Length: 147
Image 1 (cartoon, rainbow, N blue to C red):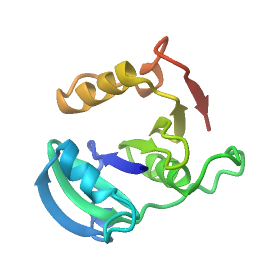
Image 2 (image 1 turned 180 degrees about the vertical axis):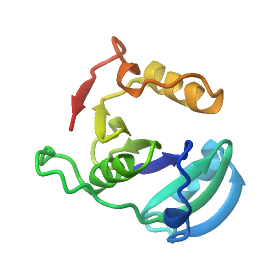
Image 3 (image 1 turned 90 degrees about the vertical axis):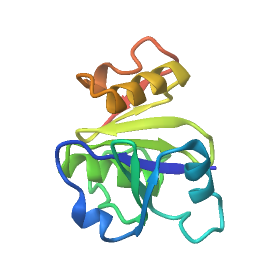
Image 4 (image 1 turned 90 degrees about the horizontal axis):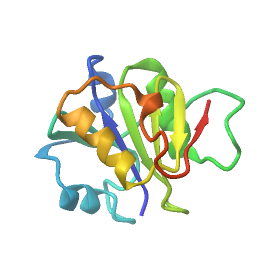
Protein backbone atom coordinates (compact mmCIF):
# COMPACT_ATOMS: atom_id res chain seq x y z
CA UNK A 1 0.00 0.00 0.00
CA UNK A 2 1.40 3.40 -0.94
CA UNK A 3 0.93 6.74 0.80
CA UNK A 4 1.60 10.44 0.35
CA UNK A 5 1.49 12.38 3.64
CA UNK A 6 2.22 16.12 3.79
CA UNK A 7 3.11 17.70 7.13
CA UNK A 8 2.30 21.40 6.96
CA UNK A 9 4.85 23.61 8.68
CA UNK A 10 4.94 27.44 8.75
CA UNK A 11 3.81 27.87 5.14
CA UNK A 12 0.05 27.36 4.98
CA UNK A 13 -1.27 24.88 2.43
CA UNK A 14 -4.83 26.22 2.16
CA UNK A 15 -4.85 26.21 -1.65
CA UNK A 16 -3.79 22.55 -1.71
CA UNK A 17 -6.16 21.58 1.09
CA UNK A 18 -9.05 23.05 -0.90
CA UNK A 19 -8.39 20.57 -3.74
CA UNK A 20 -9.21 17.60 -1.51
CA UNK A 21 -11.87 16.30 0.83
CA UNK A 22 -12.07 17.82 4.33
CA UNK A 23 -11.44 15.27 7.09
CA UNK A 24 -10.50 17.18 10.29
CA UNK A 25 -9.66 13.97 12.15
CA UNK A 26 -6.98 13.05 14.65
CA UNK A 27 -3.98 11.45 12.90
CA UNK A 28 -3.89 7.72 13.54
CA UNK A 29 -2.52 4.67 11.83
CA UNK A 30 -6.02 3.29 11.29
CA UNK A 31 -7.24 6.50 9.63
CA UNK A 32 -4.23 6.72 7.32
CA UNK A 33 -4.47 3.01 6.47
CA UNK A 34 -8.16 3.39 5.67
CA UNK A 35 -7.57 6.42 3.43
CA UNK A 36 -4.81 4.78 1.40
CA UNK A 37 -6.58 1.44 0.99
CA UNK A 38 -6.50 0.78 -2.78
CA UNK A 39 -9.71 1.30 -4.75
CA UNK A 40 -11.33 3.57 -2.16
CA UNK A 41 -12.59 7.11 -2.89
CA UNK A 42 -9.76 8.94 -1.06
CA UNK A 43 -6.93 6.61 -2.14
CA UNK A 44 -5.46 8.88 -4.83
CA UNK A 45 -3.74 12.09 -3.87
CA UNK A 46 -2.17 13.30 -0.65
CA UNK A 47 -3.30 13.76 2.91
CA UNK A 48 -2.42 17.03 4.62
CA UNK A 49 -1.57 16.99 8.33
CA UNK A 50 -1.51 20.10 10.48
CA UNK A 51 -0.02 19.14 13.82
CA UNK A 52 -1.91 16.08 15.05
CA UNK A 53 -4.92 16.76 12.78
CA UNK A 54 -5.40 15.15 9.39
CA UNK A 55 -7.00 18.14 7.68
CA UNK A 56 -7.82 16.77 4.22
CA UNK A 57 -7.37 13.76 1.94
CA UNK A 58 -7.26 13.18 -1.82
CA UNK A 59 -5.46 16.51 -2.31
CA UNK A 60 -3.71 17.38 -5.56
CA UNK A 61 -0.07 18.44 -5.27
CA UNK A 62 1.98 20.34 -7.84
CA UNK A 63 4.33 17.99 -9.68
CA UNK A 64 8.04 18.74 -9.82
CA UNK A 65 9.19 19.83 -13.25
CA UNK A 66 12.81 18.92 -12.46
CA UNK A 67 14.18 16.92 -15.37
CA UNK A 68 16.92 15.16 -13.39
CA UNK A 69 14.56 13.03 -11.29
CA UNK A 70 15.27 9.31 -11.49
CA UNK A 71 12.99 7.45 -13.91
CA UNK A 72 12.32 4.82 -11.25
CA UNK A 73 10.36 7.40 -9.23
CA UNK A 74 6.65 7.75 -9.88
CA UNK A 75 3.99 10.41 -9.60
CA UNK A 76 3.86 10.30 -5.78
CA UNK A 77 7.55 11.13 -5.58
CA UNK A 78 7.24 13.90 -8.20
CA UNK A 79 4.31 15.36 -6.24
CA UNK A 80 6.27 15.19 -2.97
CA UNK A 81 9.19 17.02 -4.55
CA UNK A 82 6.87 19.55 -6.21
CA UNK A 83 5.08 20.62 -3.04
CA UNK A 84 8.33 20.65 -1.07
CA UNK A 85 9.76 23.23 -3.48
CA UNK A 86 6.84 25.66 -2.99
CA UNK A 87 6.54 25.35 0.80
CA UNK A 88 8.48 24.36 3.90
CA UNK A 89 6.42 21.19 4.38
CA UNK A 90 7.79 17.71 4.98
CA UNK A 91 6.37 15.00 2.75
CA UNK A 92 6.42 11.31 3.54
CA UNK A 93 6.13 8.97 0.55
CA UNK A 94 5.56 5.23 0.69
CA UNK A 95 6.09 3.55 -2.66
CA UNK A 96 3.14 1.41 -3.68
CA UNK A 97 5.42 -0.90 -5.68
CA UNK A 98 8.31 -1.40 -3.23
CA UNK A 99 7.08 -0.17 0.15
CA UNK A 100 10.22 2.00 0.39
CA UNK A 101 9.82 5.10 2.57
CA UNK A 102 11.13 8.47 1.39
CA UNK A 103 11.04 12.02 2.71
CA UNK A 104 10.87 15.17 0.59
CA UNK A 105 11.88 18.54 1.99
CA UNK A 106 13.14 21.71 0.31
CA UNK A 107 13.07 20.11 -3.14
CA UNK A 108 15.25 17.16 -2.11
CA UNK A 109 14.32 13.54 -1.60
CA UNK A 110 15.81 11.19 0.96
CA UNK A 111 15.02 7.61 0.05
CA UNK A 112 15.04 4.31 1.93
CA UNK A 113 14.32 5.60 5.43
CA UNK A 114 14.21 2.89 8.07
CA UNK A 115 11.94 2.82 11.12
CA UNK A 116 14.38 4.72 13.36
CA UNK A 117 14.83 7.55 10.86
CA UNK A 118 11.06 7.68 10.28
CA UNK A 119 10.47 7.89 14.04
CA UNK A 120 12.98 10.77 14.23
CA UNK A 121 11.11 12.63 11.47
CA UNK A 122 7.71 12.17 13.07
CA UNK A 123 8.95 13.13 16.52
CA UNK A 124 10.59 16.22 15.05
CA UNK A 125 7.33 17.26 13.40
CA UNK A 126 4.97 16.50 16.27
CA UNK A 127 7.24 17.55 19.12
CA UNK A 128 8.26 20.72 17.25
CA UNK A 129 11.99 20.07 17.51
CA UNK A 130 14.41 21.82 15.21
CA UNK A 131 14.14 20.01 11.87
CA UNK A 132 17.07 19.54 9.54
CA UNK A 133 15.64 17.16 6.95
CA UNK A 134 18.96 16.41 5.28
CA UNK A 135 20.44 15.07 8.52
CA UNK A 136 17.44 12.85 9.22
CA UNK A 137 18.14 9.25 8.46
CA UNK A 138 21.90 9.72 8.51
CA UNK A 139 23.53 6.39 9.38
CA UNK A 140 20.12 4.74 9.74
CA UNK A 141 19.58 2.22 6.97
CA UNK A 142 20.14 2.80 3.30
CA UNK A 143 19.77 6.47 2.54
CA UNK A 144 20.07 8.14 -0.81
CA UNK A 145 19.54 11.83 -1.48
CA UNK A 146 18.19 12.93 -4.84
CA UNK A 147 17.12 16.16 -6.43
